[in-house]
Image (cartoon, rainbow, N blue to C red):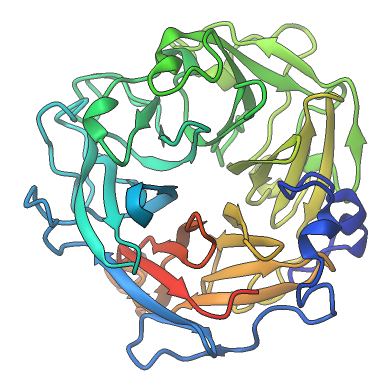
Length: 460
């Protein structure tokens, strides 16, 4: 049983313990509008500038756009803005670290910088923006270059960003001079502290996002594979847990999740379904020298797959991860338009917390969840990556989906225009939604055209 795109089953409220950092799901919402029965901040107001539609009372500031000069003078702002996180700096400053999901033929690649470049043939990487206490951009520079398809990632407890390559290309493929498919650590305040060193022990596969258990130091990782064989959910046991910047270079053990009797998570349809005694199986070859990890032999009992594993985050005593969609026509065991799963390490328990249902109206928010973060006043903020209009949408304790922002920057479908068919209007996805350390500002990226926004207003 699943919910519609505009409503999640109300019973998920009882299953939400641990989504919030403070404990029970209901505690996060105490005193908020959602608890009083009012969802969201009202209808979206069309932006006269045609960039970002927001509810009344909210406003945005454009921090940077692709093609504009980097303030460092290193070159233009790269395209394909993706995953992002915000870190507290000195004297009230905020450091934003932003991914650029450029492939070998990317539109505007990340400029190569000596000491910060892994593979000169790679066009992906990260840029770092430093903002003052009033939200003004003080600096913008390359944080890592020469990587490939930097999609999402996750923050560490010690204040660095783990950027993930969503590719398995090896040296000699697409002009690359080194193997790709790794995680890299990036210090937004001082990128030269971390350099451009792949964390090879964390695996070589189509990485999407990570979440670090702040108690044990275990790192959970998602694999975004939308074609069969689908991706896996991993955990990395570091040799130096919680050792600070650079400690993940000390190596560790990579394992994949096995849910006994469940070969494909998309086959689970009922919100609240729970599985105990989750198993973790060592990955035979984490470097995928001959065979991609998800195709390797995990023994006669196999391993558990899932289509389009994307967002990953830690809350309370649990790790949450997202499956953006599953289509049986593409080989999944079932159909859905977004799932959020919760894994409780202490109980070895996996629970389906949220399931989005039929694709009824792609102009409404609530399809294909991607990056997820916790809103400071309660609930979740989700970057949408689906069809039609693209939103940042909120999810309340009562299971209601509400719009927070809508991308007003229309783009033309290249496929339609190039094939002689009538041009179709599309809107680029949102990515990298995150909040400032004080919770007063929401930062979010528009993937295409690459635009970084800072949104302020009457946050509850």
